[in-house]
Image (cartoon, rainbow, N blue to C red; front, side):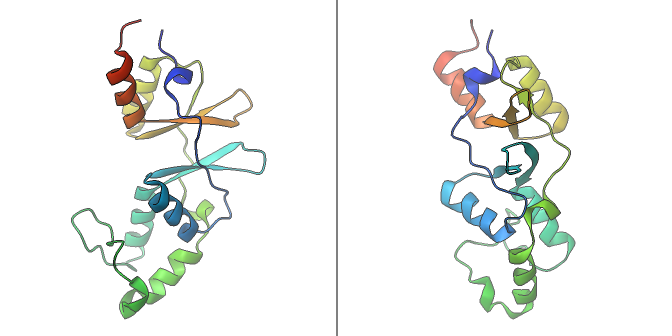
Length: 158
């Protein structure tokens, strides 16, 4: 039986709750990822921050114009020079992750089955599932891409 521990990426990046959104965006960009588990000082999972959380936060405040079809400002745009967005950029860059992270968590343990993972992804309409141990400490993450890569390499047969 295929388990979460077979699929998960154990080299998971995470961020603390007091880090700024600006720090998170840099991690997203530098590592080409779209979600970060948020952990406390003991590596206990307390939330997740996704690109969607940041887009929703910025658009709810009407502080950054959504400039492309992807609802994201081009990485080549120097937003500090867009006067109407300067105040908003400053606010977003200083906002702490715990203020906008998703706190309603969907996660699994390492022994969760393939079908349990798919069910969680579908019911939660999520793309990232943190994997935790019994003490809720972060041990990995599973993305839709991880699942597709697993199928491509191993198939779904036991």
